[in-house]
Amino acid sequence: MSSPDLNEVRLQISQTDSDLLKLLAQRRALSIEVAKSKLASSKPIRDTSREQQLLVELIEQGKPLELDSHYVTQVFHSVIEDSVLLQQAYLQQHINPETIANKVRVAFLGQQGSYSHLAAHKYFARRAEEVIEHGCKNFKEIIAKVENGLADYALLPIENTSSGGINEVYDVLQHTSLHIIGELSVPVEHCLLVATDTTEEKIRTIYSHFQPIAQCSDYLGMLSDVTVERTDATSHAFEVVANMKRDDVAAIGNAEGGRLYGLTPIRTGLANQAQNFSRFIVIARKPVDVAEQIPAKTTFIMSVKQRPGALVDALLILKQNNINMCKLESRPIPGNPWEEMFYVDVECNVKSSNMQLAMEQLQDITTFIKVLGCYPSDDIKPTEPELD
Ligand SMILES: O=C(O)C(=O)C[C@]1(C(=O)O)C=C[C@@H](O)C=C1
Image: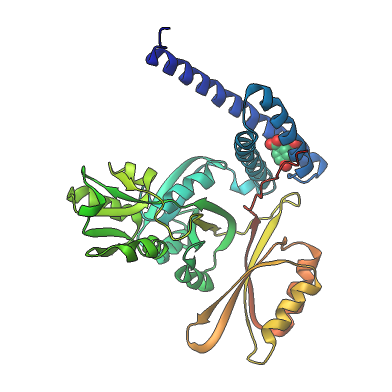
């Protein structure tokens, strides 16, 4: 039997892949039609029973095609997640028409290839035609760019599943007049990247930003005779390693970003946690309204009186108003030793009646309270198909 011609098969694969792309684009266009219908009917974007029904049907249809149910589920989870986020973005632009733009100027940490750069592109891919990049050296510069009108939006990493909350960002949020208008979580896959044909054993200096260094502390702790050098951003580490072209230096960062600098990964999965995610917030000069059909989050900061139970009383107000708190962080208040500013994320639209009432009640028992923003939740939990 003659074996298939590799080039011929590859041509067919490429053709099939481009057919898949066309079908995906067709499905996305249908998602927008669904969003238009839901805008008119005020139905919620998410319909988990429809998702459930779709997944069960697709798994059934996949069986005679020898497509494994886990594979089908995985592919369609990502298709449906994209559909939900696309519809949310459509609705958001509809109720905030001033945010519709062909071009947006976005400030972020680092340059091309940094995690923030990749996150900025991911976030704005659904909202604008073109992103005009404003790479910055630090968080203060990022905030100043938007405050002074030199950029429309900024992206800031706020927390990571391995290293926790990013204190510097919490601190700049205390003093800014900007508002949180969005969030997104991105998987952060740290790799060891090199510029030459070298091996891990030869590496003596590793460059990276403070955050990846913290998130890969277990791996770095196992290395002996290796110096770790901090850079302003991972993109800066890529630049340094690419320029040095030495076989004893490496950068830690994202493989896709490193490729932009001609670097190749020689080891992957360096983070302490196998599931390493970073959550970013998107900030702008004006707050946005969140459509009722979209699950919203509100972030506010507050300080409470220095008396026993003051924080508990504040949290009880949330409970009494049936508001679910999904995050609580505290940071020192500069100039007020031992006083704390609390950062609270709740799963609630700031315009809802229970949230309005809770804010009124909180005003009475806090020494300071300010809403940093209300925005669509990016937490699209996948629906698991219930199979017999
Ligand atoms: O059918 C709908 O209501 C849609 O919004 C479309 C869709 C999908 O992409 O299939 C997306 C979100 C819903 O949770 C269910 C299904």
